[in-house]
Every structure is written in C-alpha cells, then in structure tokens.
Amino acid sequence: MSPRRFGYLGPEATFTEAALLKYLDSQGLRETASTEPMRNAASALDAVVEGDCDAAVVPIENSVEGGVPATIDALTEHGRLQIIAEVLVPVRFVLAVKPGTSRQEVTSFGSHPHGEAQVRAFMSENFPSAVYLPTSSTAAAARDLANDAGDHVAAVCPALAAERYGLEVVAEDIGDRQDAVTRFVVVTRPGPIPAPTGADKTTVVAALRSDRAGSLLELLEQFSSRGINMSRIESRPTGDGLGLYQFSIDLLGHIRESRMAEALQGVHRAALKLSFLGSYPSADGELVPVDPTTTDESFASAADWLERTLRS
Image (cartoon, rainbow, N blue to C red):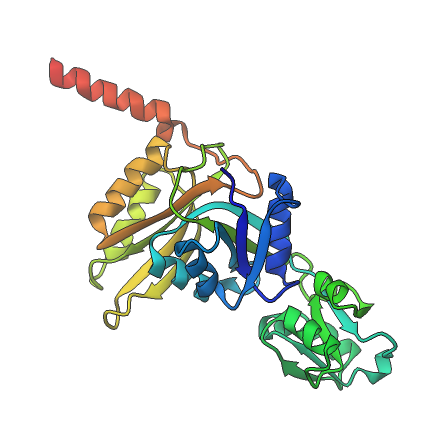
C-alpha cells in the first residue's frame, strides 16, 4: 500500500515541498495524501520511525553545494529507514517583494545562506547596495516578508513560496547557475524493496574498521572489481574518535543484481558496519551500463562452472 501521510522538511513552499508534490503527482496521490512540514530533517525522519508519518521527503544532495550533512547523518543514525524513491527538482530562485514595492526600494533581502550563495552574482550586479539578511530557509524569507516578521524588503525564494505568500515577483530565475538541481529522497520504514528497473541506485553507509592505510581502498575495490560505479560518496565521522569515519555511498545498480549483491557481501566482510538504506529507481531513468562480465548471466555461469567443477 502506498504511503498516505507525508512529512517533509519545512516550512511550507520550500523546494522540499515542491519535490513532495512532484512525487505525489507521479504516484497519483496528490488528492488523497496528507502532508505536514517538519522543523528539520531529523524530526521528519523521527515521525516516520515513530509511525506518525508513512514517509518523509528530505534533501540529500545539491549539484552546487554537494551532500546535505543533516540528512545524511539523520539517515545514518536512525538505521530503521529505507529509501524507496528519489526526486530531482531544478533550483530556480525569484526575487519577490510585497505588492507595490518598487525595485528602487529593495535595500535589503532575506534568504537562507545556501540560497544567497547561489544568487550572489545576480544581486551584486542588479542590487549592489542591498544588504543580505540570513533567514532559516528560503521559504521562511518569503513568509516573514509577507507577515512583516523580518527586516528585509525582498526575499530570494522559490516561485512556489512567492505565490503561496502573495508576494510580487520582480525578477525570475536569478540563480548564478542555471543547471542547479537538488536531489530529494522519499524515506519510509523498512519494507519491500522496489523491483529492479535497470535504472536504479543503491544507498549504503559503511564504517571503516580502522584508520590504517588502505582500509578505504579495500572497501572501494569491492565495487570497482565488479564494475559498480558510485554517483556519490560522503565521509562523516563516526563519533568514536579522530580518524574514524563512515561513508554514505550511492551506487548505480540494484541489490537484486548479482554484481551488487556480491559487492555488498564483500563490503560487509571488510567494513566494521554496513547499513543498507535502499535500492530504488533513479529519477533520471537512465539505464545503468553493465559490463558483459558482470551481468547476472555471467555470475550464474560462473556459479554453474564451480558447481560442475566440484562434482567432477
């Protein structure tokens, strides 16, 4: 049964809500699902673990800023969660003001630091005297402006936030990088793994046994020797001492593929701890290229050869 109650990283009208709505539309759940903004990624995932929500949508990676540590850490710490889908949302910012405000009156603007970093060139060129005032999120900048709860005159925010809070857009698509994208994941309690599609990702967290030379190489060789590519790897401290790290890794492939299953078994032997966080369809739908020597058929053929050899 599809999830019906969704938590997401709030407040309302963030890129995360846009990702959630995009996912709901893809599943035909827009009209029936209930949604609730959460204070942070940890609280959204807590709601899933505790059964208050069926699923949560949280950001995990940005093409400009990289991985989202708060989400990666929260996913790692819980251990009782599973990623079932990912959603890609283009990062497009607008400059919004209260209706009737002229461009000449924009002497300050509010936004989240990540948002400000992505529009710095535009603001410097078009509003060089405007003072930047940090807010807790890009959507909060719009909400606070609409409610007279901040000192900023304008907000750098998503178009959804400007529309939701009744603001007037004075400039569209103001990001310095036109190709910026944020990747979100849909997280549930552990359950059935989505079937392989040929265009899949697998997310795991592996902790090294020690900080000795070559320990990370031993772990990564499990993937490279089986033709498995990584699309993301993030190091995070284990908290057990200096030099001890765990790695959050996205792999191209599915755990039900022989090459992936064998690689993860190898990592399980080499690592201090291995946590499986899910195999799920890639949002871009691009088929993962597989070398002929690492297909399921090649692994089955090798297993058959070994069995026949042992019988002879």
